[in-house]
Amino acid sequence: MGQYFEYRQQWNIVNYVQLFVFSVSLVLTMVLMGARKTQLTYYKGNTKVAFILVYEILQVAGAILGLVFMHLSKFNSTIYIICYVFDSAAIGFLIQVVYSGFEMIHAISGSDLKISAESRLLSTLLLAGMATYTAGSSILSNGNADTSYLLMKIGGFLFLAVTVLIFLSLVRLKTQSSNASVLLFLTIVFVIVQIIYSLIVSFHKAMISTDQSTKFISKDVENNPKYLLYFGDYKYYLFMSLMMSICSTFTLVFSFFAMTNFEVPAKEDELSMASQAV
Image (cartoon, rainbow, N blue to C red; front, side, top):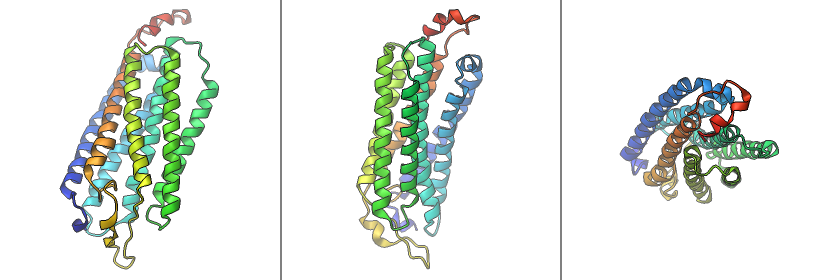
C-alpha cells in the first residue's frame, strides 16, 4: 500500500512524535494530579483534570493506530476510520478540558458570575458537536460523501461556537492578568486553529474507495486533496493539528498547575487565599 503514500516516511515520523509527546504529557498530568491532589479535591477538580488524561490517551492510541495503518500491506478502512474518529473525539475532550479550566478559575476566584445555565448550554452544544463530527468521520468510507462531510461541518462549527463562548465567558470573569487565565487564553487560540483545520478538511471532500475483493486502495486517492490524513501533505496536519494539540495540552497542564498553587484554607471564609493563585 506504500505506493499511495507520497509522504510515507514523514507521516511515520509525525506518528512517532505524537506517540512520544503525548506519552510524556500523560505521565506529567498524572504527576500533577498527585502533587495537587489536595487542592483539586478541595475544588472538586479531579474529574475536570481527568478529561486531560482521556484526551492524551486518545492521542496516544491514535498515534499507535496510525503507525499500524501505515505499515499494512492492504488498505484497512476500519483502522483508518478509527484514526479519524479518535481525532474528532479528542478535539471534543480537549474543549471539555478548556471549559473545566474555566470552571476551576471561576470557583477559585470566588466570582459571583452565574454560570449554571451557561454550563448546561455549552455541555449540550459540545455533546452535539462530538456526536455529529464523530458520526461524520465514521462513515467516510461508506460512499456517503455528502452526508459525511455535512455532519463534520456541523460538528466543526459547533466546536467553534463552544470555544468562542468559553473565551467570552473567561473574559467576563475579569481575571485576565492571572497566569492561569493567560495560559487558558493561549489554549483557546491553539484549539481554534485545530478546529479551523478540521473545517478545512470537511470543506475539501475526499473519499477513500477500495476494491472490495482485494481491499487495496483505489487509485482515486491520487485526486484527493492534500489535507487528507496520511494520504495528503503531512505539513498541514503537523502544523495545524498536531503542533496545536501539543501546545494546548501543555498550556492546559501548566494552567491547572498555576491555578492550584495555593494552600488549602482551613475554613470556608478563607477562600480569598486561593483567589490569589488565579
